[in-house]
Amino acid sequence: PFVAVNSTWDTSGFDATLVGKPLPTGQWWVDFATPQGRNSSAVNILPLLARRSACGVDVGYPETKQENINRRMRTPFATGIRIRVNEDVIDERCTTTVADYTDFSVQLKHRIIGGTLLGQSLETIFMRGSPYILLKSFGATPHFSIPEQI
Image 1 (cartoon, helix red, strand yellow):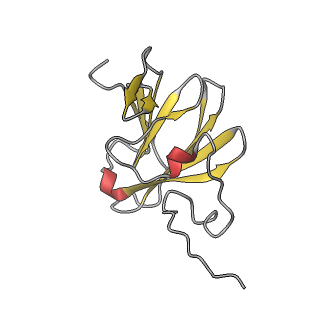
Image 2: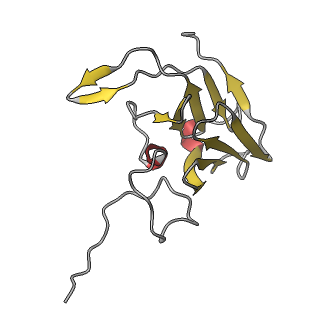
Image 3: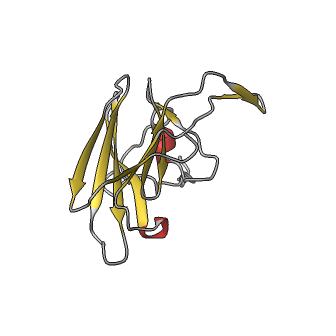
């Protein structure tokens, strides 16, 4: 009596251990799992904002004003610190996925998938409402930088 429906949701932003399980929608961190684009949304972690990249994550505070763009409110985001899995790796050789989550936290895994640094990874853990970021390094030498526009 029921017709099978295949999901069209792109699950490439989730770690392989989570694919095939029921995945939440509407969670505060779900933009971390959406495909990365130039104008992707920053995740509001309160008090921080964060935006994933292929090799890491950009973290900052929201700017004081909001913009109304096409009937959607958007909080402008300026990167305060950039965290990358390694200084010497290029974005095409990295992947960032949601590795685990709870109602109040999300864990991102940044993996090097090519080149001489293959296999190194870094995990960043964000807790909603906390200004702290936990990092776990697996063979990687994390690289921290401050963008020039600051």
